[in-house]
Picture (cartoon, rainbow, N blue to C red):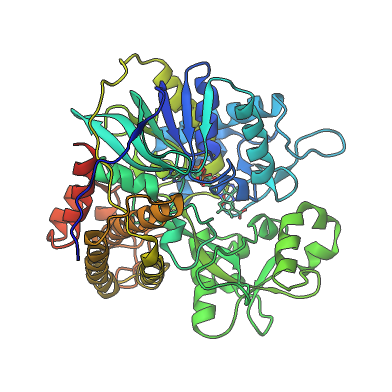
Length: 562
Ligand code: FAD
Ligand code: SIN
């Protein structure tokens, strides 16, 4: 095999921007809009702005905007869901700022649903003590909100949108981030210089074989930050949504359609194959118990062969049906009639509480780098996120990141000498896809809803084997004219493999059960370990005995910061 080093082919230098924002979901677009009139380059890896989870959001945004509600009550619910690990002052800020920001959004014309009297309609979701979920188009909140934000971005001349642009890595010099290397469908490898970079790259659901996340959720921002030595937090906490629709016709590993929790808020029940309502025996709040409790109860029914179904017949046959057009369409597309039959469901990876550690302005441990939205770990979600708190978080912290950056003055970076990585040729695409699938099965089976020490050890060793196979492909790589698909396929595998290892190690190190992290071998929460876990790539490797894969990651990072 020919060994090809990271090489220096044509590297375009993009026009300078004041700020690079990576990601065009709620967090990225709110940040970019708030930064106007400063010059922002907004990068997104999909051909249009609608990639990522935001446009798929169903339930809505939680905020204390109802007459009977208060930010304090919302904060209490958020803290309870966080199972002792949420940071109280940041939660306070989220719920107070959140109500304010949402009122501003409503006042500026965001298309939220209203009753006939013109009052904003409020939905209910699990573990919320009152109705406080603001929604749009019934259960099409994300689609409507994303369009509203994308229209505003299109009308903002200070924002340059670059679609089909895959951010590969951060460029770090003298302890400060000073740009991003990206691969553009039109233009190839490109250096974007800027004194400020914002990661708004969303989540990592694609780490798991079963996920509600779109294909873009490949932990890119998390992996980029890790390679740059940035501090990460709460990585072991991955939320599984209890009710993803099981479509018997879907391809293995395909994103699973979501049946929103708002259905259970409106009275939908969970039944087994014999029609028995099982959540009443599991928790006093039955179907509205915390997500992890409901998800594990469903998982158990599936393992025992009893089946698990969401019964929404009463809703679909009644007046509330109009509130759920997305659910109706998803059920019908999978061949079910939700007005006539219970729908088969299974838990699926949905939201990563962990991410890049930030302070309450979204600052990371690396100068010049901010993070907001799902990629960030602000401390609000603790061990488990309260439903519909993530769009809220993206909105609140997108504003805070923008305001913090706007208050800074840093000169534009000087010229940088950068190499770009070698990318495997298109003919190994199937091999890369196969390794990605193996990784996702491994994570779902050993690092999923139920974990134990033996399984996590086995997963760590399997990660080592996988890293070896990835290195073999990397050593043979030398594609001088890759396409965006080649770069994305390869970059996403590298990012998932790194993020998978980090999540597995973090899970192995938390010897207790708390929130979304459930260990069969340590079924109780332990007061002594009830603190947040902050890690860097180096910490993790030292603690894991430094036996696997580090070289590959640091090589890539080193090549990029030449
Ligand atoms: P995203 O919206 O995921 O956007 C990430 C962006 O980053 C995308 O534009 C993507 O293309 C881009 N990107 C990623 N990597 C790269 C790269 N390497 N280079 C360039 N661009 C890149 N939360 C709620 O609060 N309420 C809900 O009702 C709700 N419903 C949900 C329903 C579903 C089906 C799912 C999957 C999630 C739901 N969530 C909900 C969670 C919520 O939607 C997400 O947490 C939130 O939208 C994340 O927003 P974001 O801006 O951080 O990232
Ligand atoms: C849902 O609508 O059930 C998802 C809400 C969320 O994940 O916050």
